[in-house]
Image (cartoon, rainbow, N blue to C red; front, side, top):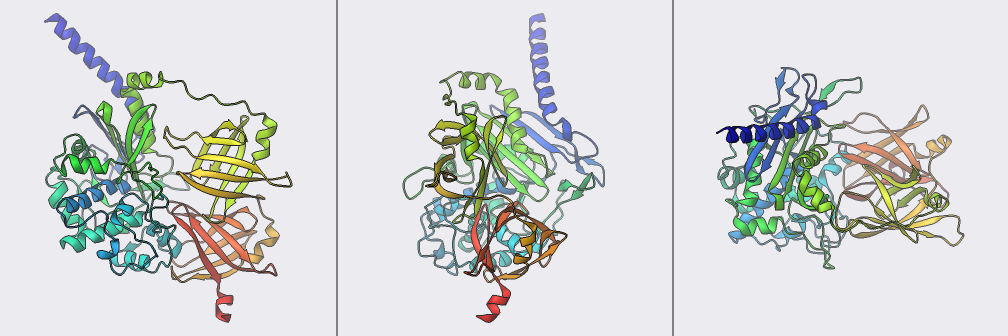
Length: 556
């Protein structure tokens, strides 16, 4: 009996040590004066630890608990994918159907876009959330399925031919919600309740398609306030599919369990859900159906994050270790739920990571002289993609900096570098080529498995040239007008329903501005006399779209 008591005490002490380490991961947010997170740690089919940190509602002083309800953003996509797979199992649709079979009003872009393309984000369709931003519709506004469809249907082009590239786009999963509605006569909210949430007994979960709906135990979304503290950050968008699932970590555990013990969809649906997509050339991509397939510290890792207004979410699974971390948060800014999920895994899977990392030695890197690294420093721009990459030196190492990204680069020799991102199989590569005059470099990159060419551009801009850009510009696909004015030596963007925004010069004729989830890059075009006539604007998920100067449009 004494031995049993000592064993129980030792197990209890070990568990307490684990939870203390986990609590320290969330310590910054575990206060009565800030938003925070709900956490569930899953091991071998059981929740081994759950906790709430911080406040669900600062106005009413309500703390976060594992029963608090959060918007999980894009973590919703895997649930939408399951809905489509259930319909495919019943032969009510095929994943290889042309989407125009169900959405005949969609434009013909010259190549067939299938449901499978949308599931794997290889459709080339522009991201409608970014399009709303560029149109001037803020996330706090009310938008409906009709608003989103009208915007999507006005698009005359795509980012690329279907199947040629992988590029994340919320449009894909929103359109699948419309396909579910047209095939079944039910909204995605109704279908998911009947076929997914109900069978899994996810009683605190729903697709949120009514912004006036009262949701018991809902955590309020927040953002940091410029003057200190926090401000409410919520949305009235009513579109589904790409996001809009509201749930708790306890309910998300039930969804997580369906991967290991498939009650909904069966083993075949889980197999499809976790099988990577392929491009037209046969190359696999790191995305399955609403799920990223990856590695972390040598272990197989399945994950997806969610970001929407003041909500952040992370679903992180290590399938071989039967271990998951579910993190739901209610604040933007410096909070990173996926990083928190990784740190929790570091605590619980320390021995497994140690064994995996003691495997094959990491590749050695050639020693590149500092004088050579300095040659590559600069700003590079891709006209085709409307993207730029900046390379700087830090601690005698070459670093790539771009909107939302900062990567250390591993030298491979011969002007080649590899991005030290997460432990993924297909890392981005950058190859510098000297141009003929030897005073500059061109950059050939492989990003997300896709080749991209960049040209070197001079950084910065003389403020005396800002007047060149002032004026009003219009885009028909967005039905949007941007007015640019010069105020106090800065170029300012003015647009209906949005606050005035300073846009920052990145290189001559190139500027950067903010959207709700990321940034946009503008590049101005000039005629043969050097007069600005238009600009192209792009985001991470929308390739360049052209705005014409209104004075020039009036003359046509």
